[in-house]
Image (cartoon, rainbow, N blue to C red; front, side, top):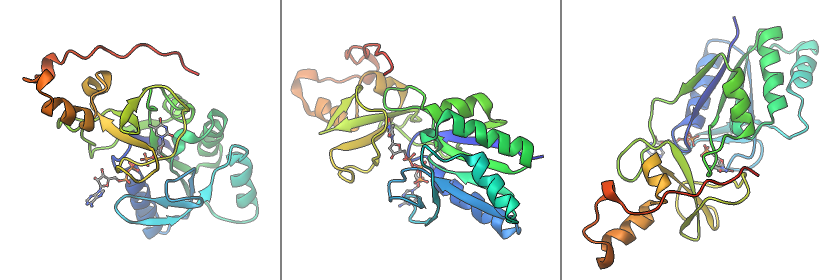
Length: 230
Ligand SMILES: Nc1ncnc2c1ncn2[C@@H]1O[C@H](COP(=O)(O)OP(=O)(O)O)[C@@H](O)[C@H]1O
Ligand SMILES: Cc1cn([C@H]2C[C@H](O)[C@@H](COP(=O)(O)O)O2)c(=O)[nH]c1=O
């Protein structure tokens, strides 16, 4: 029986790599799949992993109706056994519902990959609907790590070197410093997200004589203010 599976985690935890591996493994056993993505860092119509592998993909626009597209291909005689859907956090809730319908009514497996929450720790629309509808939500085994060594569970946005908690939900970017203009991301554990303590801020605090001795467990930074969703 086909399944809707959501593979989720923070940025940089290996989701796109797993998407490529799953396509490879299913393809190697003679199954036929289609690969979709939306706004990959490497550009349109490509699914890329930081390990250096990439493949061509169908770009998902807001107006794409997955149900119509897949039914159209199937009725034209094309076999489809599974869909790989990367950057699924950016899909609309309706598109996730279409994916669920494809699983249930066409017996096509859907493997979706995406980050759970944005830089404000709020769910993306696509991730929210996937968590609500998926047969399984799998957190990736490879853990992205905070600079302190704890498991990272949040994605901080850093602009001009400073962590921000307000702004547009969608800004494509990378976790590698200096690779995406002024917007960068850094994965952090909850504790350091709440204290807005990025690796840069931690280094600055560690060398500042005013805050020495620096004890992370009694860090005096105030908690983040609660912000309203846009
Ligand atoms: N040079 C490297 N050597 C080994 N592993 C790497 C290297 N660069 C990146 N990785 C691995 O790739 C992961 C990121 O993979 P990717 O699929 O691009 O992540 P995601 O799609 O979740 O953002 C990192 O967590 C790390 O495990
Ligand atoms: C946290 C956050 C991320 N994004 C963007 C940044 C990247 O382009 C993707 C995540 O890709 P990855 O393969 O998982 O690294 O999402 C965003 O637009 N808004 C955010 O709040």
